[in-house]
Length: 331
Image (cartoon, rainbow, N blue to C red; front, side):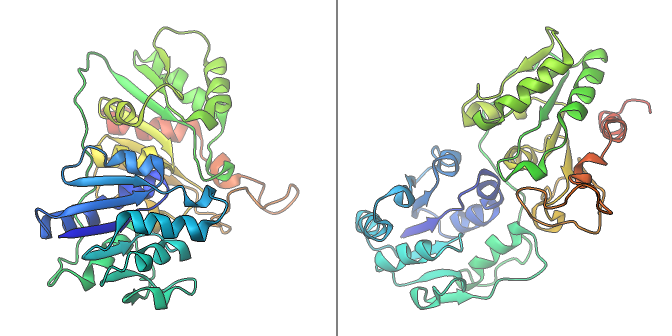
């Protein structure tokens, strides 16, 4: 059997899709899977057996319609196709492959391109939304999605390690302040921990500012833009604790069951909180304006609520207290 999946575009969404993918793989054993998506999400699954990742570059083409048609011709007809993204072109891709069973959510005028156009479940976690797509192709589907799952290499661990992740690909509104991350990092350096700074290329300025505030210390290791995705996964698995904004690495740490503290401001914890992770602690101020889901804080100075208040009102002291509790240190 040949199964096509149009994967999500963002790293964290790709990780949150793993319960759906693992359930599908378990039900349709020995099937060949074609996974189409962004480069970073395809990289998550490049070593999975019976799996062919294909990077979708159609958005960069002069004619996306023509590029989508050519990609569909390259893939050919499958037995089953599911799109996890809600974009029109993802459904068009499934349609153009001439796959007889095409599943996705009824969004953005694409219902006619799908054989099974589902209504989007309301008030559910993103993991559950992806998983719900299987309800039309797996009889007697267990209503409870399993935990996140990633293949992770094993690295030796010889020290106590804290990881800080100040980045957030979605936008600046999700970021905790540089000063606060630096204060937490300096505290754990004083406690004898190695402190690792993580981030992508777009986070170099922010991470560099944190490193400068902390100052020179041999136990401070800046890995921003220094790791491949497999290396990032392997490093996160070695941490005693990961402190992070709502981000893709947060979901990777969840899949690895690395203890973590997640800082939430403008995003919806109900939709994107760590899934099935008993050693995750969420910190949110639950302000009236949240979750606004904006990339950039829309508030202006002088109002009843100050700009970025949802993140700035989270204090380093409360993060340190939560961290000490997770690490089993006396409060």
